[in-house]
Structures are given as C-alpha cells and as structure tokens.
View 1 (cartoon, rainbow, N blue to C red):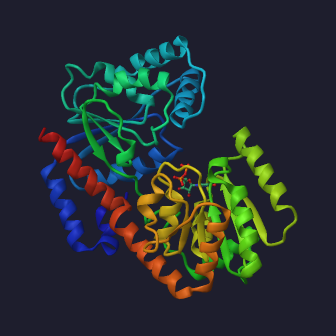
View 2 (spheres, helix red, strand yellow):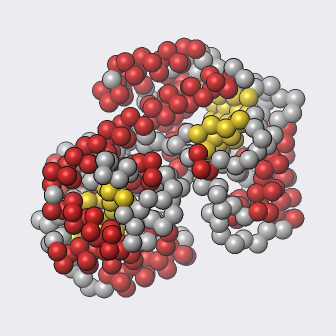
View 3 (cartoon, rainbow, N blue to C red):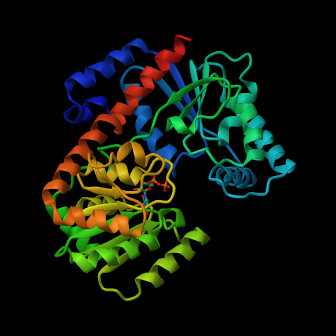
Length: 400
Ligand code: UDP
C-alpha cells in the first residue's frame, strides 16, 4: 500500500513532516468519500491513491461507491454532457430516476463520518438527507461547470446547496450555491506507472513495440480522440513545423472503440494524416499507462492544442517529465503553463507551430522551460501536495 514516506525523495523531509503534522491534527477523523465508480475515470484514479495516503497520516478514510442501474448511469451521463455545455434532452422522468437511485443509496450515509465528500454529480442526490446528519458535507465538482445546462443545474443545485461547502478545480468554476467555497485542482501521482521514472532500455523497448522511430525529434499530443482536443489542428500545425525542422508527430489516444464520436474523430484524424510517413496515429488501450509515460518522456515537445479543457492532466504529465510544453491557454492549462516560464502558451495552427519550432531550435530554452515546468508541478500538482491541501481544507472546515 502506498505510503507518504514513498514520496519523501520527491517532496523532501520538511514537506513530509508538515503533512504528517496536519494529519496528526485530524487523527481519527472519518472521511467518507462517495463516488460512482470503483474503477475507471479520473476520480477513481485519484481516490485509489489518496485514500491509502489519508490513512497513512492518521485519518480514517472510507470509500463507498454508489450503486446505480443502467438507467441511472444513462441519466448521469446526460448530466455529465450537460456540464460540458452540450445541448441535452432532459425530462421529469430522468429526475425521478436520479432521486429514486439516490434514495436507494441513503444507507451509505450512516452518520458515522466526520466528513462526507460527494464526488461529482452522481452521488449528489444523497445530500437530500444532509439535514439532521452529523459531520460536514462537501460536494467536489471535478468538472468545468461554467456552461452547464440550466435545467440540469437547477435540479442538481438544490442538492449541492444543502452541502456545507463545495470544492472546485479553479476559481472561475465556482457556482453560486450560498455555501463555503474551496478551490483544489487535481494532481498526478508521480509514482504511478504513467509517471514513474523509466529506464532507457524500457523506453526504447516500448517505443519499438509501438513502432515509433526515435531518430528525429518527436512532437506529441496524448489525448482522447475528441474534437475539443483539436487533433486535426495538431496535424495542420505539424505540417507547418516540418517545413522548418525535420521531426515526426505522434498522436496517441484511446477510448475510441466504445465511443461512437471518438471513433468518428479517429477516422477523420487518420484521413487527415493519410499515408504521411512522419505521422503516427496510435490507438491505445486503457491499460497503456507505461506507453503514455514513454511517449511523453520521448517528446521533444509536448503539445496540448485543446479548444477547451477542464484541468488538462496530460499537460501536468508532460510537465512532470520535464518536457517543454506548447499548449492553448484554456481552462486549467492556464495555471500550469505559465507562458515563457513553465512552457509556451499558443493558440491557433500558426502560433502553435511557431512556438514548437522555437523550442526545437532552441534547446537551451526548451531545457529551461522543461525544468521549470517539472518544478511547478512538483510544488503544486502532485499527490502528496494534493493530500496536504485536503488536510488543510478539512481542518478549516472542521473549525467552521
Ligand atoms: N489518457 C489515457 N489514455 C488515452 C488518453 C488519455 O490514459 O488514450 C489519460 C491521460 O494520460 C490523462 C487523462 O487520461 O491522465 C486525461 O485527462 P485530461 O485532463 O488531460 O483530459 P480529459 O480526457 O479528462 O478531457
């Protein structure tokens, strides 16, 4: 099981001690996390590592998973899309299904927790029974809610506003609920398979297995095949880059197989790439953590040309590996890629191409940005730092 001590070489003794001290102040506190999936998705990924760490520093964390039905998940998927600003069809029946499944899960909350954390919108219906229950209840919104569909939000806000507070990834995501507000961006785990150090031998072996040659600089974007990640724009930028510096492009992503829209985007990407020998379009399985790790580590430049982004964990991952990053300044990318300091911010095919060329031609600049980017992530967006923020937040909340 993962322990705080495992991270001491990364965060240093002083920081580890500060975290332990905060843990001592919360010794024995029962923190109940509730989400809707034991595996898959970013929240489960984070909880899998955060829960043991909370335990290691003296808290008594619990993690419960909401029991839904297929019908319920169809409803919450619609709500999820509604958070992303998609036009969705909602009706009273969907709200009733949501309320019904919430009722069936009321027994998850037994009154024994000092803190109840409802992750994302799926378990939010439990807040119906907030009144009269002990402990502090917090809703953690892990998505960008700025463009949430109004009808869906009006329904969900009645639950969210019953909580004592809400947690968001960025200040600009804060909704007006009339309760306390906390801002806590997500984090990556530097010791996970996706982010751990790899040996040169491993790196070469994985690249060979993926069929990606390593004799020219690689420009890489790792992302789901989604229009909001602008993979076609990446190809257009790449063609401008290659006119000036010999290099290759790797687009790597997965999840297209069971996502009809992802499939269509992947098709478009393959068509755009054509038989260009310098463009590698990879479809990766969900288990390809080491492959992603190796690709990011092998990048001369990591691109993230997103049109929109909640936080942008692929950027965090690229920065952590000390790679120079060129990314559009949207969503959470803006607090990660500080232009000219921890990477280059660029928007549009030409600007992105220009920024990548600059980095390919200036190894000194690329190295400096990469090092600063890694340090920025080390200080702000890795798991033990995230744990520290959690502890500070829980202490603050307990004092209210
Ligand atoms: N990811 C992955 N396989 C893929 C594409 C992405 O495991 O084929 C991972 C990626 O490494 C990152 C996460 O999924 O950890 C994507 O998070 P991000 O915030 O970048 O974007 P989202 O997909 O949530 O919009």
